[in-house]
Length: 120
Ligand code: FES
Image: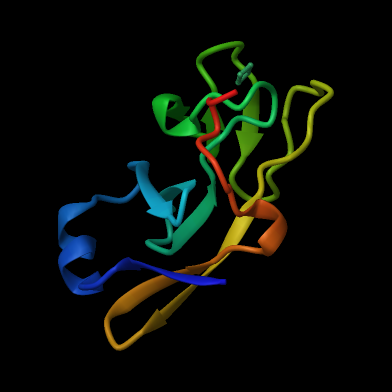
């Protein structure tokens, strides 16, 4: 399913600098968005594969990774894998599409959140 993330990509490119994570919403699914060092937008599920803490609360590292500050698992932004050999799933990347100065994200059905992640 496609979700519109930004309705004015030119404006967002000016507002959000490279290597800064922001959280966006696709339905009820929270996604982390950032421009990598090549100024290309990437998106992944904003939930640490370890215990689902939002990765936008973590840190971007100089070696192109995102560090979850909760238990310090570190994930490559190139392939999503945890780089220190921790036994966990990789980041879940989402495809992004630009059209008519808008940015869209494609979320597979299995990644759509039907209820709040932290509700029981
Ligand atoms: S919740 Fe991210 S490392 Fe544990």
